[in-house]
Image (cartoon, rainbow, N blue to C red; front, side):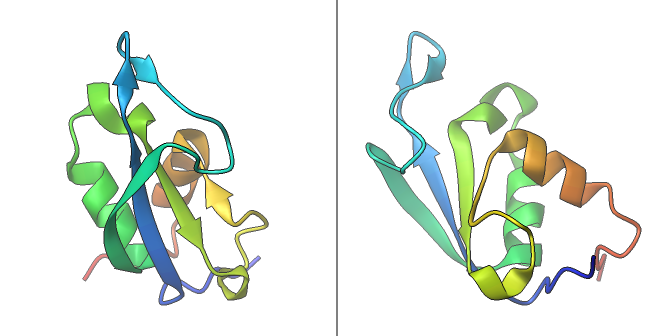
Length: 88
């Protein structure tokens, strides 16, 4: 399935609670820290220390064709490994 890497997206960070993510799947308790495109977010996410990545989610427009509108760390890592991810 083709992903629209230029789709609108926003990066959300959860506050840590005992080194784990606090909150629930519906973004309650998270803070929006960045807005832009899906590809821009993936670059931002990959620049984060690996030990902190579980604190982040991305909310993406349905037009991105990612199957989900809230992407967790596993989803983001899978998209980052795709051959069609723009690198420029």
